[in-house]
Length: 425
Ligand SMILES: *Cc1c(COP(=O)(O)O)cnc(C)c1O
Image 1 (cartoon, helix red, strand yellow):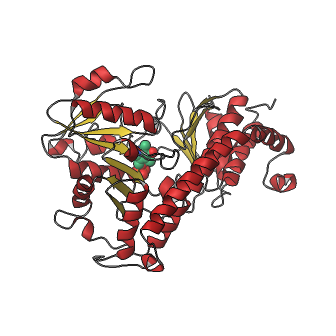
Image 2 (tube, protein in one colour):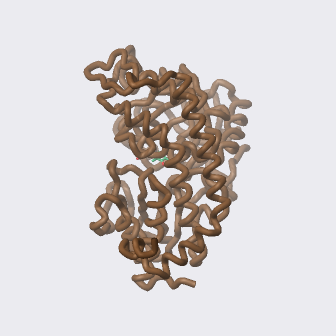
Image 3 (cartoon, helix red, strand yellow):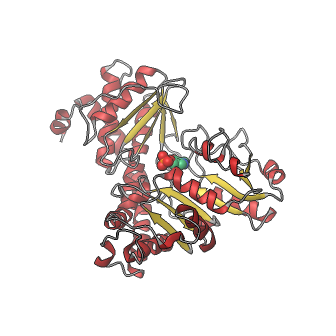
């Protein structure tokens, strides 16, 4: 084994250090195995209940009327997430698009959107119109209000109560911290927030951005009162196999409203050919609990490796996990670059290229990204990125297999070691 790792560029010193860390994570990994087992049964039950058959893998073209595989898959998603309905479509280009469809489909001019738990994901700023943008909700006369978290990272219930008014129509909660410094919310916490909002205004729609959160826990936001739950298929639920897509699961009314925005009023979910992706959507969803587990093991391994070496990591080495993202503050630009080079060098695709910081549109500093993915931009596959500014933190996520995630972490450490940026104990 060690020899093979050596051929992959991992020194004996790094290998031994990693092995020692891994040895201490057995119990933690067993807990991830149990969650994955539970979720695997949940998905299997939904597939069996809906009589998934070979016919489901057939393709449709043109309008996509009567696409049996597509319609059955949406029932499988809905049953797994315990919702009345679900849209799962390749026409949904990415997570931001899915969220935009959910918002535009369920809000009307004069309504107000409330973010009760702080700023939403960066890309939603233009959807909402927080940053002025063509075609934003703001341009359609939908106002926006935000309540920030308290300093200790919990919900500011007093201010939320004050912020809810006669115009408040939809409340948007983001489960994962994304690229912010706040903690990610547990499903239980989200349930408490939803219950609070509903006691003040029972008919308000509660939407949860579930990106990076699917199958991390045995329950999902839809189990604790969310009317709508939204995510990307090139993250957890696509299982690494879906080549594109997004989903919106929730009440029949919310999902239908979203469908009129996804296609158009009158047509809704009746159209939208699956163009041959059905099989990968099914197989990806089937694999998703196991793939999410692998990514979680990789994240916890990274947290433990880098915490041991004295770096600040979020979440820390022992905290419970709510999503698959791991932040490591390396403190220097060289550290961020070396880490990303290691992740890239461990990839199955494009392992021979060196990532470099670049001026990415929409960011106020240079950004470096490492990804050698089968699906472009897929962040359920092993990937890392970091903005080139203090505190010089890198965000690490994904790994279709735990073994690959492990190699990625070891390789990142090797690059830091080779650059003289760390010393091993
Ligand atoms: C990834 C992500 C999104 C959507 O991003 P896309 O790149 O458009 O798929 C939204 N919210 C969160 C929390 C995310 O992690």
